[in-house]
Length: 503
Image 1 (cartoon, helix red, strand yellow):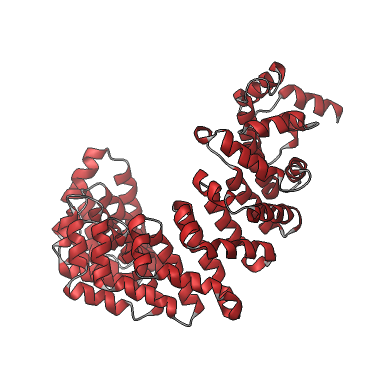
Image 2 (cartoon, rainbow, N blue to C red):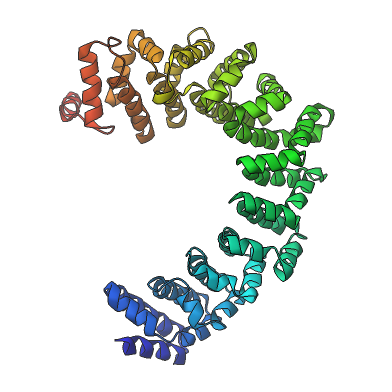
């Protein structure tokens, strides 16, 4: 059975006609695709691949692409690392091929090997291949570079790989890549990703000196470089040891200082969105630490929201949303007194009057601020979310319903998502039950023409169908349950016929 495939491959190598080559490759793919798993594996294992490798220097791009597709299919039915072990010289050599598809083919095969707990040691034993893999992080083709980054992250996530990567020639290879500003951030992303895997990984990465190099970028005069560094350091800050390390290096104190001095330097204002995002992510996981150690951050957050500056309003709203995700974060905000109530009034203004993108962002974060998981609901937290909702404006439910009636899918959906959050809380259910015409609006399927809005409205009704006893009468609860059972996209045929007859 293998003979037919081998003969086709040899014939391919003899031909000069591009179209004939493509036809042969198509024939092989079709025939191979019809095989059962056992036969496919047997043929893929018995083939001699060297003739195909030799064709990867063809002048025709389409032929190369088709060969890469075929090899990807053949390799995929074999064990990870099997091809590499058979062609220890030929396969790594393909990483320097001029065509990005060829480089990607090899890197994806190495990624399969690096992802296998037993086979990863094949790569870790080959320093030459490891150096090539690290160098590919600097590849001109971003897809190739990203695949190389994924392989190196996997290698560094292995305890043995961790120590191998940060020694000798490999350490120097990383260091050389850091000399290019664009490539350096790819390297920093890999380094931080490895550092996040364990306490030991963080210690070894810190000893390499690369984390300090990244931290030093925060002192660079180029604001864009600082923002890139902040983006990557945010990933380090969201796990406990990483945050502790950054505190030991006084990174958080320096970032707080940048926020405090923002008014003194107009360029610093460009940093505020990145700083807000950084501290917002920290607050999502460690709200109490942020509030107790860095109160100036929260003050700055409320100042930005109050200022109405649309250029930095979005990240500030996201940060407030992040802080509010946990019950712990909600109580920390409550402890600040009137500041939160002022911010909520501002969010109501944003939701009604600002440009659409900002209105949606405001509503999305309002949903996070008011949301409380069922298992975490008690009188204390429900009293707080009710107070916050009531603080939005004179008629907060009326405001949300007006948004839910907007003719545009994105803003309408954002309004319905806020309604879904309050419909899962008893005070919200009570508000909905007494609001004139709201139950009818929610049960009317003909109003919604957008799929995302149908889904969002379905979530509202689903919550209401499980409402506390005595909030709605039995007939209304029955209607809610029928709506839920019928699903979000149910179409009443009788209604449709009636409408058609009236036309």
